[in-house]
Amino acid sequence: MTRTELIATIRRKRSLLCVGLDTEAHLVPDHFKEESHPVRAFNEAIVEVTHDLAVAYKLNLAFYEALGDAGWLDLEATIAYIRSKGDCFIIADAKRGDIGNTARKYAEAFFDVLDVDAVTLSPYMGKDSISPFLGRKGKWAIVLGVTSNSGAEDLQFQPMSDGRPLYEMVIERVARWGATDELMFVVGATRPEVLAEVRAIAPDHFFLVPGVGAQGGSLEVVLTAGMTHEGGLLINSSRGILYAGTGQEAIPAARQAASELQRAMDHRMTIAGIFR
Image (cartoon, rainbow, N blue to C red; front, side):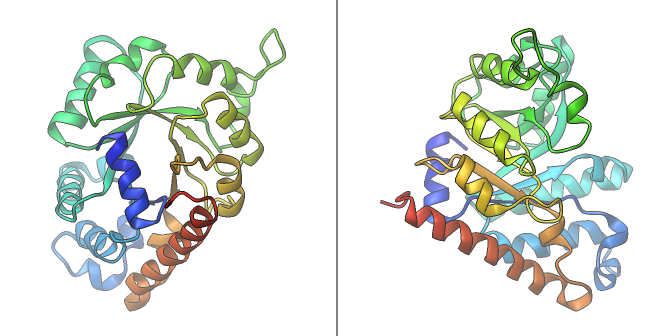
């Protein structure tokens, strides 16, 4: 999906919502466990009731790789099902970060075989860990900028000689490696003051923002700190949607949770004049 297409989808759906399909087999409602492929069936039900509200879906590969061959087949089937719904941006949340032929093969795996739109990457091995994912029309590298975990303090927030935190230099430098139509940054929702700072550093790049909902991030604060005249954000909610309800109410509750987020996004984007 190109940047132009992504912005058009945001405006058409009046949404910045990304639904995280971090599906854990043991948390799938019991009636899905009767299916031959419980995770796949649950994912498809979630997509069915949210695809008109969601701009993007993010699949965390660990939850599928942990299930072996069956998990990989669930991943492929889920991606195909999302594709069947039309204009949805699909992210492989893989956090890869290697170099040389290995990075090239990862790019081929995600873009050529799985046919996702984007993959999350770690930049800490340098430009040659990111460049194999660039230069493909409609494909994106989503680079870890500032994460919301407590361990981010160990490296990302360490001061450099000029007193600035390391993440600022990383984002400034990485932003020069790729254009705004092929490179995004991950910026955690639980650090809103940092989100505003990163927006100043990278004013035109899209941000993937995890941490709204179950992790405690505020949607309103994220929109204030990071939204641009084109939207500029993909705001992820995983557990807050997947596990909004239990049993037979799980899917209706997921729809309700997604709808509440989308309505709040629509309201703020309308005020900002994004739909003009």
